[in-house]
Every structure is written in C-alpha cells, then in structure tokens.
Length: 237
Length: 315
Image 1 (cartoon, rainbow over the protein chains, first blue to last red):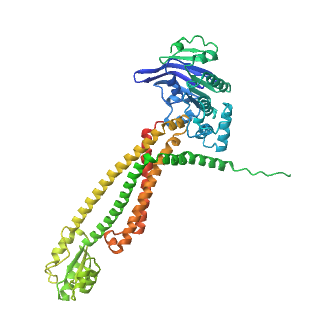
Image 2: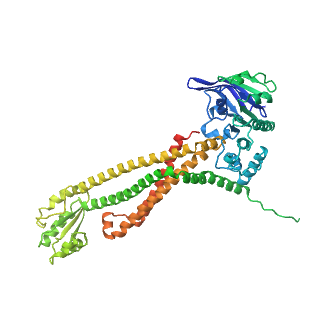
Image 3: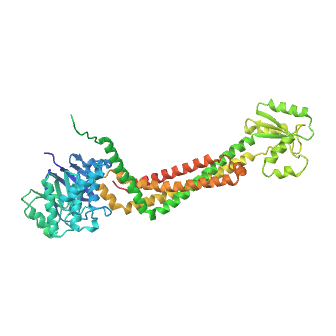
C-alpha cells in the first residue's frame, strides 16, 4: 500500500537554526497519528511541509504521490486539494455562513461543482459533524467548538486522502475536545489519514493511537498505536 | 412502445454554464464587492489615475493638433511667394515663371493675381479688417513657387529677389529660420509634455500599487484561507487584478468623457479658429482619443495591480 505521506531525510533550516533535522516517517491511509513535542520542536514546520507552505532545505516530502519538495508554486493548489487542514483558530471566512464556508472548499477546488451540488454536499458534511441545522449561521453566531466542527467539515468535504490538524483542540473545552477527537477517529475510519499536532497529554494518552514525538527538530520516538507509553516530556512542557 | 420521453439538458452545456457562473462569482463579483468595500483606500488611486488619464487625453489631442500644425507649417514653408512689383510687364513675369518652372528644385509654379490675393487676405484672421480698410487693393500679385526640398528655399529666394519683375521692397515671403523656430518650439513642447506625463504616470502607478498592497494586507486572512483550501493562483490573484481594472476603467471612463467633452466644447465654441489652431481635431478624433484614454486606464489599472500582486502576494 502506498503511503499517503512520506518524509525521506527531511531537514528544514531557518537561517542557522534547524527546525527539522533528518526526519523519516510514513503515514498510511486510514491511520490516525499524533504529532507531539514541546513548543518549537518543529510540529508546525512539519505540517507546513506537508501542505507545501514551505519547502524542505534537503530531503523529500511525498504527499499522495506528489513530490511536494519540488512542486512548482503554480501547482501547489493541486496538492492542497488533497490535504484537508484544520487550525487552532478555525480560519473561517466571517462574511460567509457555515454552509458557504464549507461549499467554498468544494467550488474553489473544482469549478464544475454547481451551487446546488455544493450546497447539498456542504450540508451533508455539516450533518456529519453534527451541525446540520446550523448551516445558515455565520461564524460569529457559533461557539468555538461549533466553529471548529465547521472547519473540519470544510477540510473533509472534498474527501481528501489526508487531514492535518494543528492544535485543533487548543481553544476548546475538555468535553468539546473529546467530541472533536471522536470526529477525527470517525474520519480516519473512513480511510482518510489524519495527523494531529497537539499538546493535549490526556487525549494522546487515552486514545492509544500512533504517536510521533519531535524534540529540537528530531523525530525521537515513533510509537505505534496501543503502545503510547510514557510521555514525560509533555508534563514539563 | 409507449413511454415518457425525458429530455435532459446537454451535460457539456450545463458544465460550461456552471464553470462560467463560478468564474464570474469568484473573479468579478468578488472583485466588485471588495472594490466597493475598499473604496476609501482606492479613492486616491482613482483620483490620481483620472488626473493622469485626463492629462494624457488633453496632451495627446494637443500633440496631435501640433503634429498637424507642424505638417501644415512644413508645407507652407516650402511654398515661396514671390511678390510682383506694381505695374510689372507680363513678359517679365513670364520670363521669371519660365526660369522657375525649369528649375529642377521647383515642383510647381502658380500665379496669384492682386484680386485673388485680396480675397485670400480677407479669409485670414487679423487681415480681414486691413483688407477691407481701403478702397484700393494693397496686396501684390505673386508667383507661388512650391519647392521640392525645404532646404532649397533660401537658394531660390536669393535667385529671384533681384529680378526686375519682383517687388524690391518686399520681394518674397521667405523668413529665414521661421520653420526651424517652429520645429524647436514643438520639440520643446513635446519633451515637456512627455516629462509631465511620465511624472504623473509614476505617481499614479505608485499610488495604485500601494492601494492594491493595502487591499492585499486587509484581506490577508481571506487570501490565506483561499490558498489553504486549494484555490488556484488565478482565483486568488485574479480578483485583485480585476479590482485594479475597475479602478483604471472608471478613471479612464471619467477622463475619456471629460477629454471628449472638452474637445467638443472647443470645436463648438470656435468652429473657424479652432480648426486653424487645432487642425485635425474632429468629433471622430475626439471620440477615438476618449476610447484610447479608457483603454489605457483599463490596461494601466490591471497591469499595475498584476505587478503589485506578484510582488506582495505569496503563493
């Protein structure tokens, strides 16, 4: 089976500082993995490399068969349509309703999608995240958890093979954070690879999924699902 | 076999329609909405570009008129009037005519009688009153010599001015250096106009680029989101270019209309003298100038925006 994400000897430097140092990893379809590590460990850098917001200094980054490390700027959109992204601060367009925010991701990726089809699929995606009745609400009319659900719906509406999330529970209360994790679990169960960068010790420990640990830009531990073990560094971070 | 015939829409046409609707929405509708939203920061660009284009239109029309004037002056400068003395014998006139007509530097020779000279003077601004002031005709008969090369005028003049048929006090219309002086003045005007337009163009382009940069900064989050959800580059950059085109188009339309109106007002106000001082400027030329001004505004606005977007918007 082809990996959805593959890092081969990836190094990323900002000036003289190494944000990532010789990272090797692979993520399979349907796999849910956590990316953990202290602040400044390189988690966001790794996610940005997947989404081709930045290029590696050396090494190769492959995303669903696309060589992101040498992708031209004119073809970046093609890669990003295969990667759903969820952020801590949701990044919803305030002037659009929840349904329009989700539909936007469909139509900018494929201009052949009509308004009716986009609206229907957006409502389906909102329904799947438990917000089927809030499609006409604007972001400011929704709670933080609801906005994050809209962001998840937007990220998966085009059914990308990969979903990356950067601290998706950072602004949510404990209960909502657990609901969000259930949602990510469901998404992975349908075959989408999910990579979540987080500081949330409790979630990582209890879910017993694969954990990738970054410290000072190095992938120091890759623990398979069910063998999460100690995460002592998290307590001190 | 009985049944219901269902006629579906031709799918390809439907796809084209959907794509066109989406392109219109994301490119033009979005740009128009943002342009209205950012009108405060766009106003200086709109103002400076309107001023630039208006100056372009007016200077362009003036330049066109001056160019025509220069051509008329050149034609007139190569036409030498050789004035005949009062009471000259027709044989002397014929001799001089033959001499000139046989000169290889001369293109043609014509004869203007005293009566024709008077009629011509009566048509010229400033000479009308003088022509009507006396009962006698003060204007001399002349041989009108069209010289092939304007540089040979001086030689022809010196050849004829001492002829017996020629008026000894005011022999010819030759004015040494007159044409060169006109050329020098026109060249100076052209250089000044070009420098002025360049300066104004620089200001307009800078102001427009800054307004687009401000628009990009004010919509940075929106741009980031569009990029992250996989919007192609043209969809992210396009609306900014269309915004610039709207600014340039509006400025061009306003400047074009004013240029046309001023030209029309000039033509209407002085139908006789206007064509003399602004030769070639007609309704058609004024309309063409207005169209060029509009097209220049459209091109300048979108071009400037494109440069600004390429410079300030990351992929």
